[in-house]
Image 1: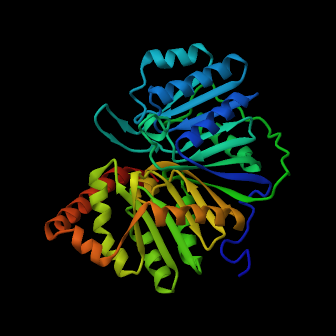
Image 2 (image 1 turned 90 degrees about the horizontal axis):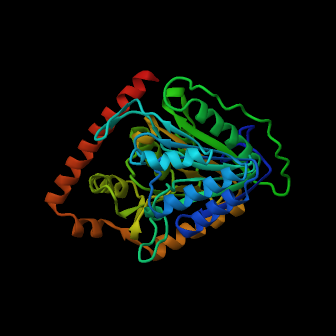
Length: 393
């Protein structure tokens, strides 16, 4: 199989990059703190959830320390998911010269929200180093005594793709919320001259309002062009009609689809809705693995031992049509094989294989009725959440 057949190499890929898969928890936050501590010019941190718990306080202190030594620090958080941040917490950040800004949803109140979310999680330092994935700034995503982190992933990158991500962060900062903000941040010309390693990486972005659906297209391209096998790890796995059709077609032509879902979810209603789809998946010869040790929050997929996509994108319509999402596609055989090995280990050691027999034994008739109700309810809620976005788009 030629290296260009699966995903033709285009100008969207940058060449000179070092890429490393980082597991959530201690590994992630060790990397995050190292990047902050070593930054000399600029730090852009943009996230969905930033909580003022032990993890969040430690990150905030590192950002303030960087700002005090002269680094330009920009912190952008979602105005809904991070709304519990206190005025005193934000004032302390600003006093240390950290530039703080809310991303403002379309509609928001303390108890209800419809609209566009800043769901991406990214940090870029000095336009050279970046860390992007599904990990929020919160104790739930960190390893604490007696409290292991939720399973999640990020990609650490050094090189040309980080320069692209720097410019993306500046654009997002300038356009945060609706309408232009005062004091626009100007982009600096990239000074990245990294040519130590070659690894093809492309930035993929979803923002329906601004006509971007690149991550969705990456997944559809993967389903359509895969020749051997696909492994998907996804929290809140509720693929829409187009995804289901293309997954079924891939399976029909002989592609092995492995799907790793949450055994325990932080949103029980979504877990019941996911299980409603298990019959469809089994009917289409897909292998289902339920992760057991903890809550699964990761969003990571690999294809044919050569392609990986990872980031903040959940396979459901909320990510497809409402949220601002960020993934990286990596077209590199050694890296893809490394990721596959980790996912295979998790499937074999940390998951239950859902067979027809297992499903029948663990899902009574009444449970299946409840799963159908949850599925239809979630579909209706997602329709309400995304209808305004689609009309605007």
